[in-house]
Image 1 (cartoon, rainbow, N blue to C red):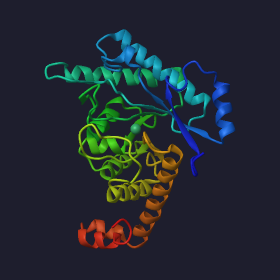
Image 2: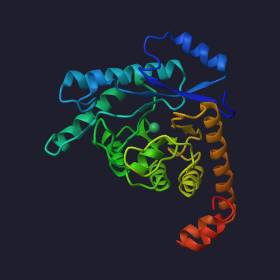
Image 3: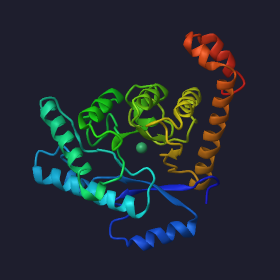
Length: 296
Ligand SMILES: [Mn+2]
């Protein structure tokens, strides 16, 4: 068991389909863990041409059924962050392939249908956009701004929000700290997937937190900390969406925890040292000098 890990997220249906709830709750208890979220992964066998936005209404209904079943598991496991949907197949690959506005409305309607299901009553649902993926070169929701528009269009305050992923934000050409600040300020930051990335094609995911972009990671933690406890702001659990493909996963998880705690301490120090006023003045050199000895 990695030091400092208290919560675990499950993919649905991949990790949970066919299991008995008591088997999962028993395994969690034995490991001293609780459930964070249930993350929907639409199976390619059914949803390769789209889930919420599939042209076939029966497939869209099946996508809603999957989310409803994930909500059922989130309730059974008492998953504090509810259900997170990464809409892997809701996008397109070619020019002149889809009608953007019709497809958008289909997506909004399907998300509302999921939220209206009995299984999802009282369960928070968040949308984790990813701008590009081999399975949809263009996502229907390719940016934080578009994701905020989606939340506004779905219009279910407190029920539907966003989970941001640091790797996806870098892939979108965004600064994760800025995206986090804006979504928290809108009151819809339901979760954040921490990790790091190299900014090159096909390498957009899953490295250890703070391992590539240390300054960006510190700024991200600063803004998560600033929104901590505010309505709809950062809820205070750090989830690491990283992929220790060749590394010892226990050591990698413990490293992530230490990196996050270190950044949190540094963010607190910057706050105490008056970084808030420096930001108001857009004073780059003073900010850099305050960070000397921390990340640089
Ligand atoms: Mn993620």
